[in-house]
Length: 398
Image (cartoon, rainbow, N blue to C red; front, side, top):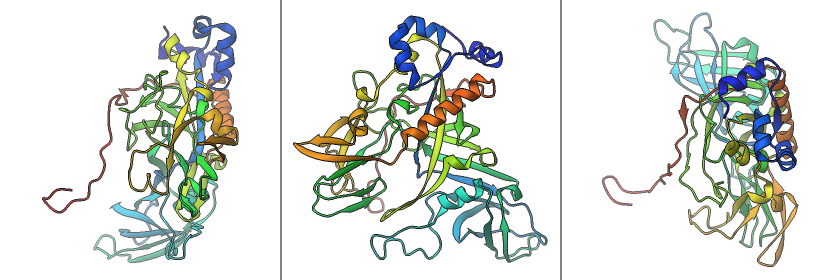
């Protein structure tokens, strides 16, 4: 047994043994679980891919004369201003003003909140346009200027739902192409798409949330952030495999970090044809090896991780529970799978190579004593379901 204090002491002295979730599999196979658990202090996990439920709080400071901003646009993308005089929240999936969306299907969705966030992190100028009704102490009614992230007092990324523990594999069983948040799906099951780093993914290496909880330190696009809450739609009461790992969507994380310290490489706006805009993020989470059971769960392989294949032409939009089959991430990463006797091309919206790079960068920071671990002050719910929205009349039944 080890403690967070003991592991952090080793990190500070430069003596911690740190491996990525990719490296630890072979290491344990060579050394054996008991010997490896005694030696290894930290395993780094990571993921990189679109995470729609993301955004940021921004503070512009006060103009002269002062203004109570009630409507705000950044590069023509609306931000929510119902907070205080010069605070806004910019959501990653907010479209640019007058974007035709899917009026002419499929829409291109060339620019939105995720792209503004990418520009800010990259240090580029964005146009700020604000309107107000005016008050005695905040008389200015209209403002147009240009700002960079260095002009802002705060730029705090605050993401309600990141790092889905597992997720659907999307396929299209209809006779026409469809466009989804998992990309274009060709008819008659010609291709499928998924989005996960598999054996590198944080919550797949901590399936019961033994170490990742509220207060845990995370590497958020290069900034040192933390888990501030369970993520929205956190559904830990899920179906699990024999190894305890969810075989469907399950846990999620609410993450926050300082955008001023982020690396542009790991913050990228995303355009999804026929669907909308999003934000691709790089996230790394260290797992302290407190005991052999935690280490054992960190040795899970892509061949042992399974995701459900869902028809996005009918089952998904109609909220049906139908599952065509389950495929391992080893199969998904192979480029071709067979479903019901039909060969299907596979594609990923997440980047395994980027995730591996993040795991290596986090490993280097920990090894250099620049990144310490935080013990959660509250664990994530382990047996929580998720309620649907049932459409009903007022005071009536669904």
